Length: 276
Image (cartoon, rainbow, N blue to C red; front, side):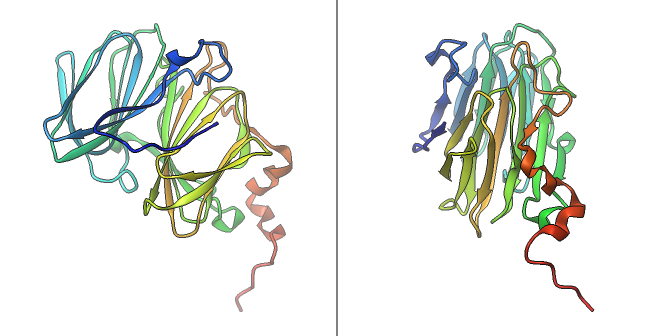
């Protein structure tokens, strides 16, 4: 399900709201997901009730929770690794903007499990080059996994980012999984566009600020147009009886899995020219 972008105003801009539907409604993504835009000295508070992940996209902000207070800076979500604060449902957070403007992504969900708040710093973010060495690099991309079942099993969320290089694919080969997921897209330059699969027989044109809701195991994959780099945040909500991971739960479409083997590069048309 594609949610088209709306002009972001100063303050909190909700994109999904879990209370709009019954919890077990198949269209409920089971996450609050939104973008917070702030100007200098703006302050924003998140109250108790839901587990919260605060991802700094760009800017300089102060994050205060309990007796802790940290200042986080990020110049570019394309070039810099993210910093994320994750807190349980009983913790309040106050965010203060310390420069001309800042932008943050806020993800919330239900979780009764209590754990110490954790700050995932940019220097500890796992960044991997997916797809390298296969398909003549047409699906090579940077995948930043901030936290998942491996380093934060107490959370009901999985959170990360992808840098999709111009004209290339990500989330490839096409795959699905049972757990609901959100993709939130940005482009560089911002007038860029791409295409996103929503099932094997459906695709959307995606533009800056769009969001794709992946529901009910729908197959998904995406590509950016030549000349336009694509960034997206991906957030997954564990199902109560079916968490995402720790082993890879993705279900690849069988007829396309051959592309994952670098030895099959020779099968791609046209044959590569040999250098003599």
